[in-house]
Image (cartoon, rainbow, N blue to C red):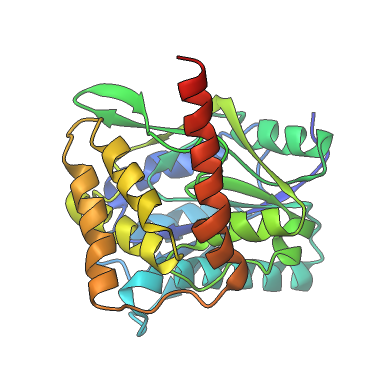
Length: 296
């Protein structure tokens, strides 16, 4: 199994009801991180207390407390994660720690005991893989169901980078869509991505539930606009999303995109990202559709 070691970063904001479960899931990993940096984003519940108490007994857990600094809402998540990665780098250098991989785990995600061990092992077997993750499942109407997502696109909630690829691709950008930007940067530099279907983490609440499910889909639509996505992609994705219960969420995704476009909100100036979402991704989608039609 893997020889590599990893540093783990977890952003936290008002996750007290299930934070103990997340901590236990990391403690229970078959290969534990050499360093786990949790970043408390000015929580107003007991999250900071839970983290501080856990740090007293877990020697490799380090807690960063942020105040309510001025960040635009759309980049707040990436700013918190960047603070975690920056602190992790500082601790690695100051303490002479060694690691070969960098990982991110959201504070509403429960990972199975072999999650990071298995991902790192498979990445070591294929050094071209820059970013890898498993699938995500969440509870819907009392049933654990996999979240609909691209099968070739590592999820943002529980991902692993090779240490070299993390820095070769610019680290973690301050952007409304840091996971997508990281994926595109990896592809543009000749790396590959991996999603392991036999590995699955559990999300204890649906995506966007912390700020409202429908607002979450609107925010996703805004992120797609920010990335420079082609409008045809938005219509196709909105229609696809409406096929899944509760059926109307795709409309809010399209609304989020349309509102940003009508308001002429800023878009990324990253040429790699804009080229991918306006040209390359559109070609990928139409090739997939052509393959489906050809098999009918």
